[in-house]
View 1 (cartoon, one colour):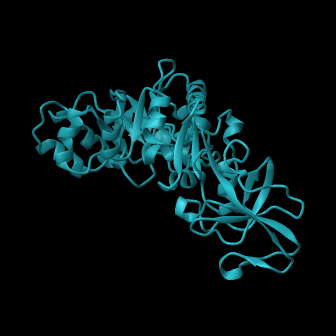
View 2 (view 1 turned 45 degrees about the vertical axis):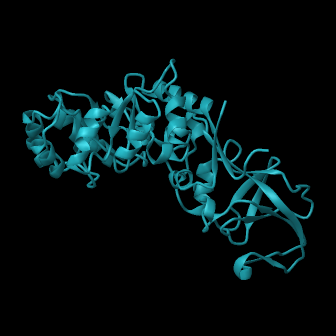
View 3 (view 1 turned 45 degrees about the horizontal axis):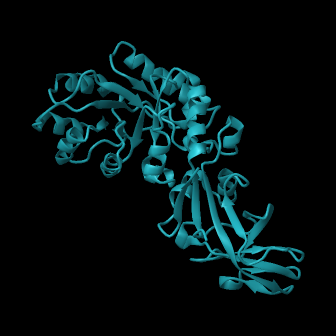
Length: 363
């Protein structure tokens, strides 16, 4: 019997989405972003799925050094880039040892590079703050930092160049156009590879598709835009979050269910109890009416989500039984829709699953 709750991850869906991104950005290399445990899909599951001989990713983007070391330990030999860069000077020898590239976004990182002794230079991507105002060098400081990197013997030449979008997931927001123009104007005559586009940039801003694109959530079959769906871009959900009915019971009109007697039934009905809750990463704040799928039927959550369970109104004529599978999101129920019901984004849902949820790689 399969474990539950479980996240079933489709290798074929990941490969399909990678090929679809290549179609959308045919002139760009693909840096598949696999931070946060491959967006909850399993870091090595994703890496090996898109490292197949045909149409593989050209490199991988990660947030932390520990993730990159896990990739190397798992046999991944592709290019790896630390999108947040290194945090300590002591990390730099590890970058050399394991052939890991780094973003430089702050002067403290540059100072560490200038004062360390390394056996060979590090490959660096210099980050421009073109408007996100989170990480990166300002337009005024960028050239100076670029020249310092060129002068640093611990930096491999050429220096690569990047920025990050603030509003690319708003297709009508002109800020992205301004960011593209600011970046292109500043780096037009500089050597090195260039990258601007995240998933939203790749899908909605084709002029941002430079030497590399950095798809994250799109690789997993999910649209980065609120109200949109991955399937509209011919992407396929890579994760199905599944659990099971562990109890079915009759509920009379006027009776409540769950903590705080929060929900009271307006009719005689049948309730299903599903073995998943906030201890598994399913949000406690999921409101009544958030859908799940059971035997092809969309059914609403009722009552409060608890640590280990949630309850579903099966209706007075429901035929569901103990042991039936329950899909919390997946091919039949888009994670984007579930996120909209809960008032969050799909990114949060797929990345916050806890270790109690078994992650299985299929096909």
